[in-house]
Image (cartoon, rainbow, N blue to C red; front, side, top):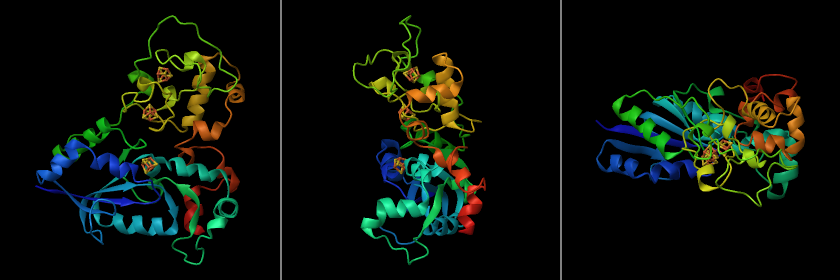
Length: 302
Ligand code: SF4
Ligand code: SF4
Ligand code: SF4
């Protein structure tokens, strides 16, 4: 049996497609005929998406064309995978939600003179997660998704095993998470200071922001185990409403700061750092900018 996979990419950087295409196992599955890439703008030369078993969607929804593409593609797929944090949560492009579309076009893109006459390529007012537009079957976060998680997904697609996301945080997988009795430093005035770090000690213990406590495991703590703090690319833990709020709570407990909001004084760009991958998926800010209306209404109406 051959599983036909389509990969549809919206506003993206190609990192997700490269991540899966560079996996030895994925290439082996293609070589053995168990998997066929039926459509991918990056990987195969085919103009139209045919009916597929699995549709991987990568990238953020940024234009009305993205919405039209994904609605049409979803009708040709038996199952849909939100692949990567852009599709799952809005990803890094979702930080554009901190300003209104008109302001975005005026301040950032106006020198490039983007087309505003073609209504399909017009920007949506805000970036939204994929599941607000179509029903998804699997959510595979990460920027790009880590290889162990893609392996689990492939097992589920090929052998029918259940695909279950981890339930714990990055700290649970982190080799720096040990009680080494080193003294806990108060947060540095700027929690980002990266000079003078000890890569063998938990970053939070050194007063350096690490998103591990509020970030879903699955990457085997890739960054802290290589000497860099976690920046939260796997997104929130299950049942979390807001990764940033969870992180504020975690920092407040870790450093005994009350009330929790006080910790924000030590973070130079709270939205940019605590919601770097998840702003469209979170409960904060931009909803209020449209008078509390739900964002998906806003997208379809505009
Ligand atoms: S999730 Fe990361 S790697 Fe994937 S498309 Fe978005 S920015 Fe690129
Ligand atoms: S806060 Fe960061 S460095 Fe510390 S245990 Fe958690 S993931 Fe590791
Ligand atoms: S450690 Fe954090 S930023 Fe690094 S890959 Fe894992 S979740 Fe992403």
